[in-house]
Length: 390
Image (cartoon, rainbow, N blue to C red; front, side, top):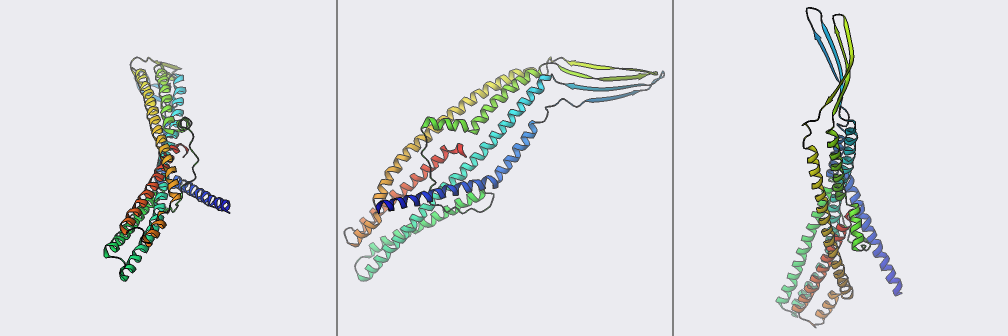
């Protein structure tokens, strides 16, 4: 019989946590579609991608016509000229553009990921607040019951006004906490609604999503580094700068011109081809040096970002480990003790005074509140560490 009860409880809990996970995923899916900032950011990067595709072709051909009148006859000249950079420069330009487009995808993904993490943390905060609201509702019910009990005792002459006042103060304090917590719930629902483009979301979940245990630190760090769009963007910038360096070298090569020329004068027509070359003496001076310096700067940026990311992940993982241990200890304590019932019985039987009752009850409430805070911080840290999955 005991086994059946344990299995039933486990199934109920598993179902509730799975529903919470699906609910959060549903909210994030809606926000990804409805959020105005995400939509605007997508449009921005689409425009940037189009801009990267401009300037990749040779300049437009040039046509000139000249009519010169003279005593010995009129002269008419026609020019059709096409100028172009050294051929390899067009290959390099396209390579730069392709890498810039790839980088824009990473930057777009990073922006979306940051916003979805924000939304997920709001959902987790609401789970904490909703759980707290349930607990505060129970406390209000208990404090009201205690206060009414003292009122009856007062009428029967079995207690004094000081004890009655303690019960009333306890009731008022908890009722105020309940109202303030409800206000916070409303605020966070409004925040999620704003992220959802104004479409209302009323998130009522009270169970945290089922979260598999995180892998060891080295495995997790590797997964984060491999999937971090910000790091990918910085690495991509390194490739862009390398290709820009190659492009600047190609642009330092001579520019070419080719075309057709026709001249008519005194009944004669002269036709021929036009060839030209631009000697690269000073137009591109220091451009190669500039790109080399920029490449060195980006190398340092990659190294700096990796160090910062490593330290951030390490700190989060250490916090996750310590919170996990603390929660396990609190869970053992909270599941083995039901102080409300014990204290109420002790007070009813006269085993403890009203002062002892309220002190012990507040001590238990503070401990349970600490547990809820630890649990909230624990899932917030997990959300940060799993950000790369969004």
